[in-house]
Length: 210
Image 1: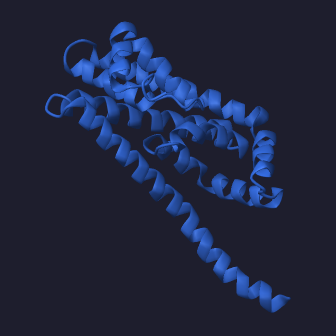
Image 2: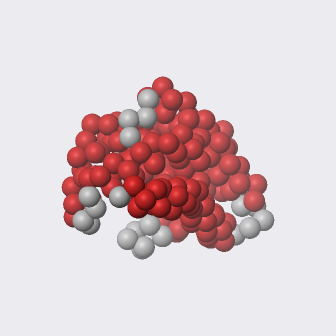
C-alpha cells in the first residue's frame, strides 16, 4: 500500500490524469474509501504552482469531488450505516446502548464534524457516513458540506500553489498530515472531555438515587 500510494506515484497519476485524478481522489476518500485524497489535492495545487495544471480547474475539481464524495458517503450512512455499525459494535463488544449514546454525541457535533472534519485525519473519511447514520437533515448536511468543501479545497490548493514554490512537496505533505492528526485529536477531545465531565457529575446523582 505504501508503495502503491507513494508521493512519486501520486505525482505521476496527477500528471497523467490531471484534474480527474484530483476529482476522483478526493471524492472517493470523502465517500469512505481510505485513499490519499488530501495528498492528491496538494499535488494538484503544487503542479498548478509549477504551471503544469491550471489553478482554477484544480480548485474546481477538488471542491466538486469533496462535495460529491461526502454526499455519497452521507447516503451510504442513511441507507445501511446503522446496521453495519451495530455489527461492528458487537464485534468489539460495544453494547447497543453505548452505540446509541455515541450516536447521540456525534449527532450534537455533526455540523462541526462535517464542516471542519475535512481538515482532520480519518474524520474526513467518516464524517459523511456518520452524518447519515445520525440522520442529520439533508439540507443542513448539504449546506455545511458545501461550505466545508469550499474552505478546505481553497486552503489546500492555495497552500500547495504558493507555499509549494519555496517548500519541497514532500515536506509540505508531511506538515499537512501532522496538522490533520492534531486536528483529529482536538476534535476527539472537544467531544470526549465535556462528555467525561457530564458522566462524572451524573454518577454521584445516580449513586445517591440507588
